[in-house]
Amino acid sequence: MARRRSQNRKLRTLIVIFTEGVTEKIYFGKLSQKYKRKIKIETIHDGNQGLNAVEEAEKTLGNSKNLKFKDSQIEQVYLIFDKDHLSLQNLREAKKEADRLDYKIGFSNESFELWILSHFQCVTKKHDNKELKQEISKQINRKYDDRTKTDDQLISSLVEDIDRALKNTSSFSKELVLDENPYTNLGWLIKEIYEL
Image (cartoon, rainbow, N blue to C red; front, side, top):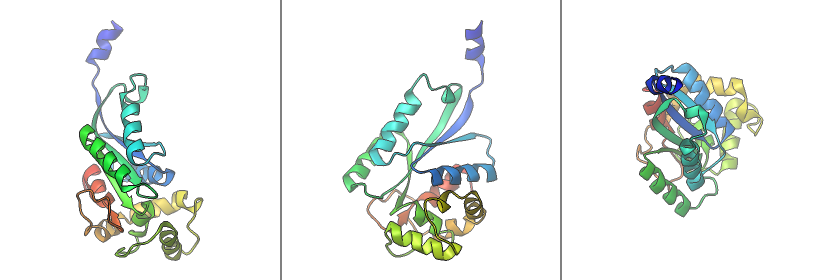
């Protein structure tokens, strides 16, 4: 009898977002609170980048013992990660594998801080991660560091000002570009995920 009930149980539709960093997890969590969708959005921080991110997502979603996805129909999987120190070869392999699995990649080069900085200004020149953090520090009038970047108030204020970030990144290609700096396609993916 229990088996019949589980077979008749309605599956919930789910979007799954795997994030490399805690900042990204908090950010997407705040977006999900702001833009309520009929489908549930599950954000998972797994700390992986590139090809590792794709392989770990596949492993997590394919694990039959993972109760988190038991009664779910997954509509789309998104992987959010940065260039950081990954090789172009690793990124190309990640894209190829993600394409095979029909996963979508949200990518920033040099780092997620490019997306953060886009809430304040249009970024048109290459910055390394240190320079991005310095620019963000100027904008928020305090040091942007490992502690600051997970600050609930800061992330909430960024999410409230998302329209500026979407506008400031609209010139970046919607198609995934792995070898440009600066580059991010997060604006395009956020519009897609939250139907903006």
